[in-house]
Length: 430
Ligand SMILES: [Zn+2]
Ligand SMILES: [Zn+2]
Image 1: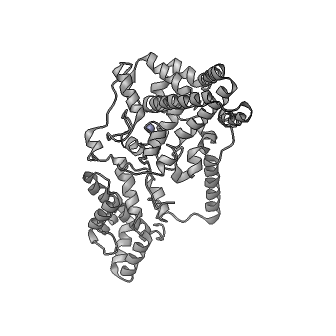
Image 2: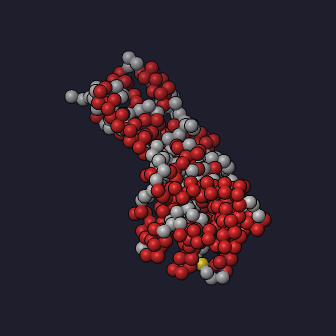
Image 3: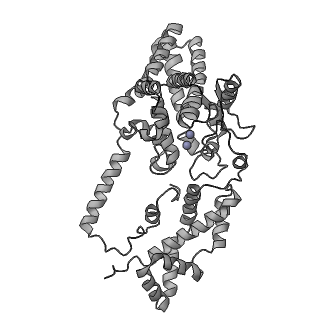
């Protein structure tokens, strides 16, 4: 796994570099038996959180659709069914990206209530559960991208889990509906969400009526499975393969061939940089078929108010948000060898009054100690200049206006980690 502390709380940061969390360094050591019990409880909690992949009722249709594809052995494959399947893939992929993703999850354009309902019908032909469930899961992904809380992060849960395993995790059956109040206010959307496979079943019946058994198996089931995995590549591959143009504090990538098979969703790093834009291909050569479709619908006045990314952001000159600065500063800080620096500082101060002075200071206030360390300009600790240089190497694609902020925050984090670690074995004050 890549070395990283991004998106983690400071306690996780210090845990990563082998340090106790702040505020814990004067606390008397936990007796071993209690410590063992605590770690057992934590292990059990984590196991329940990440290994609850027991199939629950709502995930059964997903399995059955895959199994149904094998029926082609008996039905045969006709040209008519293959062409119908291809058309269904394209139309429904448009439903997934223009509907589930860009409209319901990100509200990147507007339409009438009837238009909204028709979009909801179109996206639910994909058999990817209800639109409210889909949007809630997806908003959660953006809120916690590539942290341990992310529903589907290849970095934390492995590639297969990010691609498909998370579907079977019982904790994902009922997502956080508080974050989708803008959708749950509509009774017709709530009704559709409660009957997630109704529209898809009607489409399956239509395929059977039009092209017989091959129509059902090849046109409907095969294209539905392709649509599943085409959509899921964005959760898995688009966080692993491709290029990062924008510093987003997560692993999202731009990938041209994923953009082709998903009608534009492969420009995923662009999307993470500015989620509420109706377009995801920011440059003219970044093919984004969904966006072209949305432009046509906008020309026909079916939809309106397509949101565009700010020019400054597209040029990569927009100052990064605080959350991203904090995340990448943690990455930068973690690239320094904290343990070695602690050993060097301790070695240099052994048997000198400095260590005793600082110990006294450490007993009173950590913030003062940190400021003191910063002012001392110790050769073992990275200077601000060194931080700037490394930040430039590590985040070459960061807006220059944010690099200084990242370097300063990373230096604070390193000093914090070193000052915590230097005196962690001090006994608790009387
Ligand atoms: Zn993503
Ligand atoms: Zn999104």
